[in-house]
Amino acid sequence: MLFYANFVLFIAMKSKVLFKPILQVIFSFLILAAVTAQDAKIKNPEQFLFSEFSVGVANMKDGENVILNLNYNVVTEKMVFMQNEQIFDIVNYGAIDTVYIRGGKFIPVGKVFYEVVVDDRTSFLIQHKGAVKNPSRPAAYGGTSEVSSSTYINNLRVGGDVYRKDHKAEVVIYDTPIYRISRGDEIHIVTGKKALLKFFHDKRSEVREYMNRSDFDPENPLKIKELVEYYNSISR
Image 1 (tube, rainbow, N blue to C red):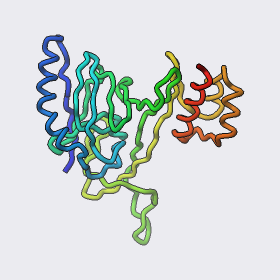
Image 2 (cartoon, rainbow, N blue to C red):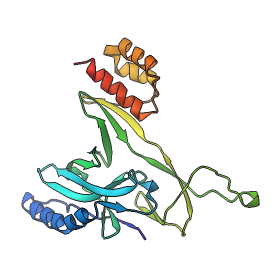
Image 3 (cartoon, helix red, strand yellow):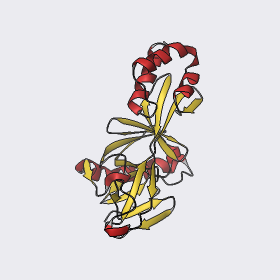
Image 4 (cartoon, helix red, strand yellow):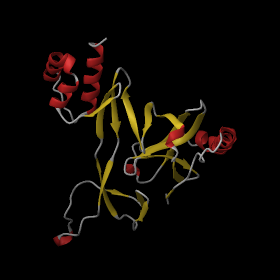
């Protein structure tokens, strides 16, 4: 059974002298598991961004690279790694510069990670989130009051609490990602076409025309990605 535990991957660094030996020990301890289980399969994967844990790289701010079996929990918004069939949180985000998983680039922002979908003068970022709904009450004649798709998990961590569910207890997880566009020090949430046209004010007419001919949908991340790439191409 999978379970979660807080694990301080990088012990609070009181001195730079202690950091490198600690990191090397952790690296040596985890590298074998990471390499021999490149695609560690997990049960109940719906709470994670990827259906499997995969070998990824955490680039540290001091230049070190740490290889781990990584995934991202969209409910707790924690970068996690698997070791001996246990899943641990990486908690010291301040020491991390960038994480790479399955070709995706993730950067720490506060207590969460953003996926960098477009990395350019104007960038497109996704904050992957998942909202949890409690099990629905049984309805008449053996049905349930909710008919949306559900996932079955044994343990679910929300915040600092661990909720242990009975076997096959119903938990509904809704994807609620937040899309952001950044340029310099500006970061704006994508709320609709009007907000985007305001953000791209210097190329408003071109962007509006592109939206019209591309059947743009502000809730579709692929469409947002293409729009940002188009804007960058005409803003060189």
